[in-house]
Image (cartoon, rainbow, N blue to C red; front, side):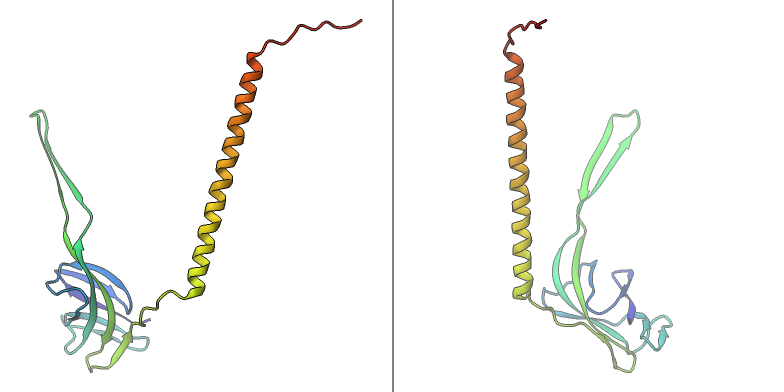
Length: 170
């Protein structure tokens, strides 16, 4: 399996074709194709190329899926014995990208992502059947709980009634 190591946003990422990554925010719009020319390392099934620091001519193409913000990171600062506290959150802006092509320094295509397939009818049918099974299991569980409640209620009612005293026959 071929892969490359690229540098963007001050970080390095190991990428392969059709992989989805979270990277630092890019200025381009969603759906655009972006080229990363800071390729530090290339590995094909047969050859390995190491850059010094970059591999000249090598590039990685990716498609921007979404510009969004990462999940919230809470920051809490406290000074002991001073009754001083400060709490705030931070959401880092990120871009989701999908790696489509990896090119070597000669411009030769090393790896290419397969086009994304839509769900086939068989998969959709399988999902619907699975949802039906889940619903049936939930209904069965509800019925079971209702039966248990009825038996518990009946037992409580039986305990509340006074039983007549019986005498043993000799």
